[in-house]
Image (cartoon, rainbow, N blue to C red; front, side, top):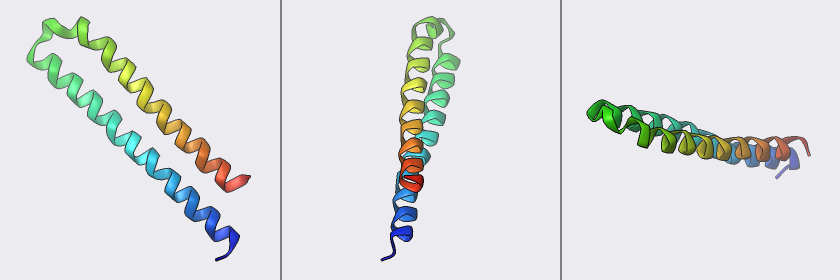
Length: 74
């Protein structure tokens, strides 16, 4: 196998983390909206957890992007 092909395969596999991160961010916001829609009084208690979950999930996606770029260009 050519080294360039291995780089592309590795970068593509690292992008699986980006796709999973995007799916989970959507899931976090959908669950938060559904929860507040059912019980609006709980918004102050679940809002912080929604933002923390979003930030952690987005950070994992950014780390996957950095690994993919390092794999391609290093």
